[in-house]
Image (tube, rainbow, N blue to C red; front, side, top):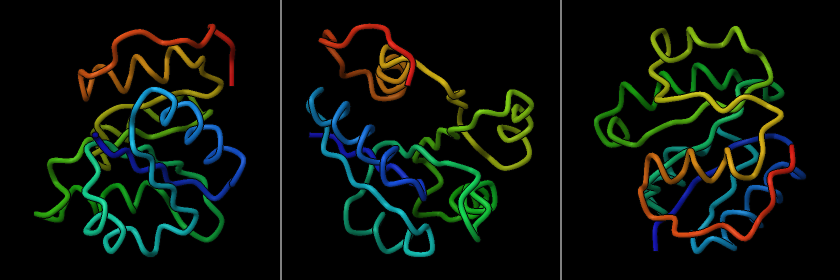
Length: 130
């Protein structure tokens, strides 16, 4: 079972990610405070990370950059989750793998996971915006 790490300071968003991804057969680890991210990654060894960039007191883009410059986390795809369509620079400037723009549908979320992990079969969820 592949593990997906979701990093966000909004517990409701983490709960939503967890419910959707767990129902699709993934193990989901949620992190509300990214200051522990390297310890959590060492423990759960995620195949994919979803990272909010606007967290209180923490710049998610800087966390993304740190992940990209660490030999132990360099190969883990990091998907930036943002409502700002101008965030495209994150891919080049901060080492993000991709961007998932809010609001997004469950299908868009699962298509993103499938693209990077290639393991989804069929979703039971309709196309509703989150």
